Image 1: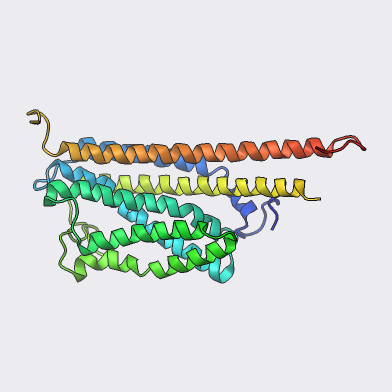
Image 2: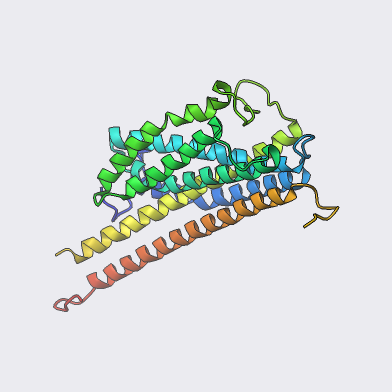
Length: 249
Length: 63
């Protein structure tokens, strides 16, 4: 695989870095701008126009940050595990780069989910933290992200690092159903899910719509950031390849 | 410190959450864009350098 030339994009999606660079070139910035616009609309809606909760009062507005962050952290880990599988089984050239760049973004989302949850918990529950099943499993997800970030960078040989991190990502998938079903399996302080795939949301629609817009905005922005970071990583590797070619006899 | 009467209860927690997320988002977006810009510039510079080296007259040594 050569980074020194852009092959003409033709045929089906092959997943090669050169094709990825070509395909994502017109996508990344518009995706970021649309994502930020949707996010701004959702945050303004949630902060200024959505109603306060009759029990929680104004603190319910933290939901418009906390829930999308939890979604992004979980979805990001699914992506990390998928990249791990692609990397281990098919040795996909892009999977390692996507995993390398997705890790810090997912860890940020998990950390923000925990912090906003803590800021929501103090006025609601009277405590910053409890060793509740949902909170603890989310903390474990954050540590899994940290482990992945460290492992993938810990080896001199990047391929070995990618393989070790891929194994960790695949093993850590077991935490995702625990996060999802913890509020059903155990008697937790954390409230049960308000939104499910099968049933109608148990919250008022005046709260559900801004939540949906915020989630869409964060998802689009996160996707755009991942594309931008992967593009940057590929271009950096390409520059390195050119430099190495230049100094080689 | 007593909160002003017009200040809704727990509003500080809400603003702290929004402020934190917006600051982290701004840092992440700007650092990612800067990194991409820097990567593009370095690649362009490397290409120019290689073109210049390739176009050197015969017999002239490379640095």
